[in-house]
Amino acid sequence: MSTATTEKKYYLLASASLIALLLLCICWEWFLAPLRQGGSWMILKALPLLIPLRGVLKRDNYTMQWSSMLIWLYFTEGVVRAYSDRLPLSMALAWAEVALSLLFFIAIVLYLRPLKKSAKALAKAKAAEATER
Image (cartoon, rainbow, N blue to C red):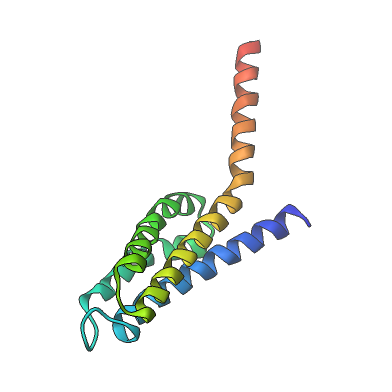
């Protein structure tokens, strides 16, 4: 499998998991298992996911790097709610949030790995060139 095909696979996986997580957060707090009947203000937790969405869809490497740190907030919330919520549906949704956030993180890391390797190799080559002068 070529590098471009592999990168595209990881990009699509990251994009799909981010969109799925966004939809999960909205549906969860709006009508699936809201904290209060009729929906709750917790639906606003989906807003931070909109910030990196455009950059991830455009394959912006910088956005992908910092969004890999943002996603840990959703992982943490999912773990806390999976162990603290009493409704079985809410617990299942929390585990889905954990799974989607992990999937996004892994896909982003695997997508960015070749970029990081090439950047390190370039920096090493430049350092070696500067030393030779």
